[in-house]
Length: 392
Image (cartoon, rainbow, N blue to C red; front, side, top):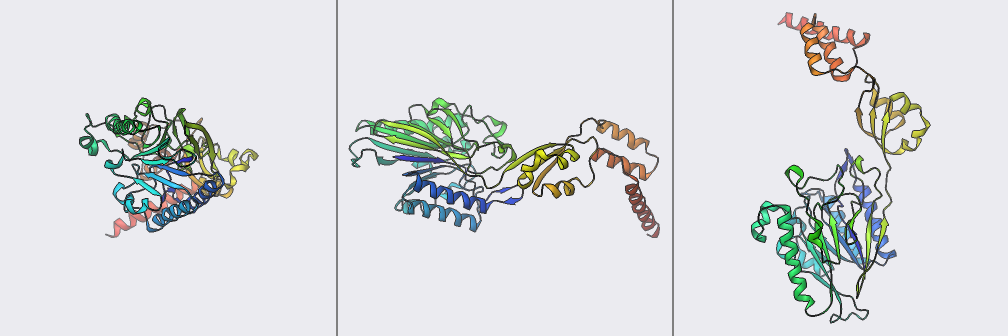
């Protein structure tokens, strides 16, 4: 049997103000093609299917289309809710969807109710089977009492959930060989985060230890957006698309897990084609606009940090002439004179007139003095204010 581990689709998300629904549709196309080409039997989606609890109509339509197409390609789908999802809304009609091969695990009561699939070549359910469990996103303050977990922490509720799964596995193992796959949406110790994930707990203390997933044949994690291996049997698939510039160097993809009567027989990578490159550029404006080293970034989404000692005029407009999809612009002056707030306060106290106050403010916020044209414009504006005040 062949499984495909995915997570963090974040359907409906934008990228620095740019809508990503078309890119997400393209991912679904790649996914459906891969299911057919790779002979995938089960698609696992480990949470954060949507980007928000109340997705738009077109976003819900995209998930509907994806599930119909995956089922049409012959795959069973097992899907859990993440911290971005509304478990109640995502889990709507779960019993009806099971008849079509889509198994939703969004309710606490279902976390130890596995999907059982035969692993014997002849489909004999009396032989070795695969039990797929889905742990929905567990908000400690909401589920600790129901799980009997103390204290109300990510570690305590995850331990309680995995203990329930182990107890169910022990009962089933008494009747024959059982191999297990567990889906969980959490921050496991050793994972590398990126800027586009929502912190799972105040203070960032929500990491759970890997040994909570001992004894499972494979643990399919969601939440972190970079594909990574925490142990041979505990992995993050990462998001299928980049959702922040911190993911510029990610190779997006999923894991293919092969399981037979004796357990997991192989794990391999499957990569997704990125719809757009991401470029993180840094330098002076002249170097960025003139250097041939940056030609590759001209059709990429760009995050640019300018290092000019003084902030260049019309920086965004000039940069977009070469890099039209510059989405983020920052400034980190190098070699200029540092201007602290205290220095500005001193200049403000020493200002001779209103014009000096305005020019001092411009100098403070952008790192360069007002030029002659700007001083003339400020002088005219101040004159207009005085005239208006005089007429009142």
